Structure formats: structure tokens, C-alpha cells
Length: 453
Image (tube, rainbow, N blue to C red; front, side, top):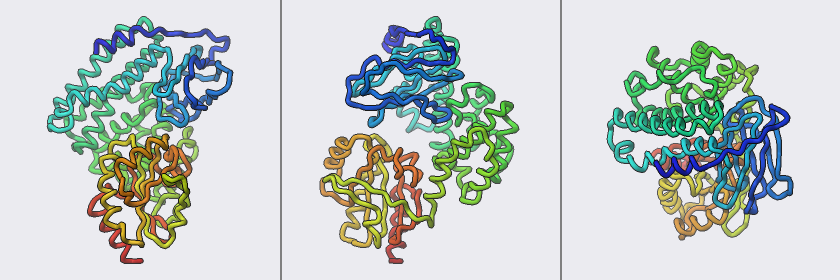
């Protein structure tokens, strides 16, 4: 921890005065790559604030903004992402090379440190967190992490703006709470009245930076609601609860939009809600929120939801084989098609890949089924190398769609998290676009569908 503190303390903030108090200046200081574009995205609205060409000679870019927030810097064609605190009347100096992306900003270094150093906690205390069932100890570990990071922020506060300090303090506690929610709600499935969740009392309902990590407040509301009620009866009931607990109308709208979006795109994290969401209930929720200030956030996920539902005609995507030839879904008409959407950087995908390869091996001689393993990696070379190492006998059909989660393929099949397993019938109709992990239930569904052919 001391070495990290010294590294961060050694960074210098370079802040530029701008003639327009609502402008932010972006300077590309160094680019030693062949990448062509860099994006800065507002994490709240998911809008691209600025797109910068890395190949032209213009090194300075400006855009207007109204308030300080957290953004994400992304380089097209890579998996490089770097958080940045963006605020009016400031400047960012960005350096890009083949393996890293950074700005010369102490605030940015700290927000990325807070984002990533939880991994050190997981590695150092893996047994206590993931093996032992000791929730009190897990709480203590993350309380200590918040304390240590808060101390670093205080020590460096003289070199930070007030807005940076406020954002860093919020990110510090909220990122720790995010893991505690994951641990209690998802890993351990503790009931809402378990005292493990008592930390929710520390979460401010009206913090102006809530929109940078909104799920924490939604999880808090879920626990509070279920401590008073046996279950969530319908979507409108929970949307009403959000409104009663939140004073700010802007934040009300944002939380409602994020709630609907998140249950659509990440249903596994909303076990107590997912049964409430079907085609009709989604339509009713969208109609209710048609005047929501953040209704735009719902356009893409709702469209993907409807196009990926059971009974819909599957999107006829095109993917690339390792030999460079193309395969379209429609080329497999007449066959049952199982799709495994994965990437080399996805831990659960890698963990489950041997099961999918074994399934492909079991059905190798059955001409009525095609098992597609579609990588959504950004690097085709990385994909090819990994496939040759893990599937040398070429069971199933290995395919590649560049940056597939952000492609039309990803949109049409609602691929917002992976692995994702999709089953399509011989007529190209979706049977299930959100199968459980490789298991007996998946294979039983395949057996039943093959019997119908």
C-alpha cells in the first residue's frame, strides 16, 4: 500500500484555465499505437462526450459540460478503459500506448486506484472472502479498506479540487458497498433482514454523485422494501417505492430508468425481480416512464429485450471462422443451434468453456445440432491463439465477432454480460436467449428439442 501511495503522490496535476467556464480541454500528449479512435463516455448518460481521432494532427479538443462527474476513456479496438473525473474549466492530458492508458491527473489516478485495488483485497484474503462463511469478517475487511483509502485521499487533499475530493470519497465507500451487496445478495443469498446488510444505513439517498454508481441505492431500496414486505408484487410497486424514498425528482427518474434497464440486461443480479419482467410488464413500465428524463437509456435495452425473447425470429448474424471464412446463422437452417457467447478475458467463460467443448464433443456426430462458440474479443489474434490451445481437436464451431458485445449481434441478443447461452430452433426461432450455465437442465432442453426435429 505504501508503494501505491508514493506513486500516486508523485503525480502532478496539470490544470488549464479555459476562457469558457463550461469547457473541458482534452490534450492527446502521446500516442505510440496504431489505434485510430479514443472515446470519453459519461458513465451516467452513457453518451459519448467526445470522439478523438488518434491518427490526425489535432492534439487539443474541447467540449462543453455542466457539472463534475465520472467518465470512462476507451480506446476503440482494445479492452483499455480508464476512469476519469471530468469537470468544467479543467484540462486532461492523455497518453496512450499498446498496453496502457492514463492521464496526468492525481484525481484520475486515485479514482482508478479505488476501482481496481479491491482485486488486491480479493487475492490477499481469498480464503476469508470466498471460502469461509464469516460475514462479520468480510464486513471488517471492507471497512478497513474504506479507512485506508480515505486516509490516502486526506493526505493528498491539498492537491485535489473540492469536486475531486467529493467524488473520490463517494467512490471509496460505494465501491466497497458494491462488493458487499454482491457478497450478501448474490453469493450468499442472505435474507434482507440479515444484519450483514445494516451498512445500508450509511448510504445517502440524496448524494449528488449517486448517479455514478446507482445500483447501490437501488439495492438499498430493495432491502428496505423487503424488510417491510414479503415480496415485490410488481414493477410499479417498486417504482413507487423509489419515488417515495428519493426527494430529488431528477434522481428519481434516473433510478427508475436504471432499475428497468438493469433488470433487463443483468437479470441474474436481480433474482427477486426477474420474474416480474416479461414482454407485457416491460411494455407497461416503458409506457409509465415515457416522460422520464432518462428515457433514452431504455431505448436500446428494451429493443434488445423484445428482439431476444422466446418465439422471436433470431437475428441473422455473420461471424468469422479461424480460416477467415464467414458463417451466417441462416446457413444452419434445419439444425438446432446452441450459442455460447464468451471472451478470453471473461473468467466465468473460461471456467465453463471445458463443459461447452465436452458438449460439442458429445454431439460431434449429430448432424441435427450445431454448437457455436462465439468469441466477442477485441483481438482476433488473441482469440485464435486461445482457441488453438483449448480446443485443438476443433469440436463445435469456433467463431469470432469483433467487439461483439458492442455490435449489432450484441444488441439483438441483449448480450450485456457473458457468458451467455442461446438456443435457437431449426426454423431460426429463439427458444431461450438466457439459458443457465452448462448443466443437466441445458442438456435436457437440447435432448427434448432434438426429439421434436
